[in-house]
Length: 348
Image (tube, rainbow, N blue to C red):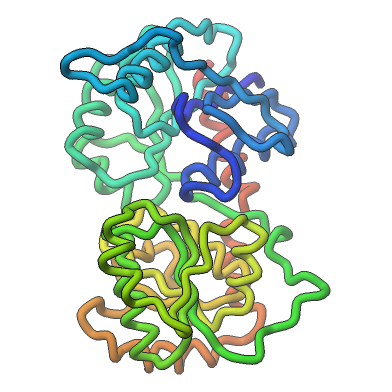
């Protein structure tokens, strides 16, 4: 098949990835290409090592701002409009992963049934976008977890599919030269912002009396400067925005990954990646989807009871080597690829 993946003309699919959605699109596109499909990805740029082709839309040479529209927003609108003019008749399947409403508005000009994967919780703007899109078209909607499916079904009605994210187990095997750290530490990873609740991870680590490494990009500078930076010390360290290889090494050495998002995680790829690295996960109900919960490998603790971290860590120490990896193996990405291939076939 010839497949077009649509993110947004302003999205970078380069490492280190901005988030789980970007990592997923790269993994899906490369996986499909490896299975013999011809895959183009609409984005701003991607690493040259990928198997897929990059389809980039340049900004306008003319100014796109006016009295009510900023130049940045005007250029986004221009690029989305250019996408609407692309001839997609040569593709067997078009698959959307975009958060940008205008992509769907202009994509409607193609007059074809496509696959749309929902990667985020319901928001007022996205709800209106997809309600309109579903009312006027015949697209196939997919949620990345059962919990997300339930949320969106209340907005869009029944008939949404659920296809979980996944991992390639071989990518997470221990390196031959890997030496476990001599001291215990905790890790939290993801965007540093209020909804990811990085501060809660810091409080849990301090309650546990263990060092904490914080991995991830600063997506809210004010939150980082006023809330997180004053908490940094020799035992609470921000190690930066890591590549996948770097993050895996931190995960493999950690006593546990702390997942403390206050927003309802759609899937939580970081949880699955930690388990694939054979590292237990401890977090809040909002941060760990039910599919990824398996005591004591991945434990849910109350967000208003920080002392629960002690019993959770005690249970985590009972986990046998290989158990977390075995559980993560249930989410082999091959299954994800096969399920999407089946959906693409239904579009004809």
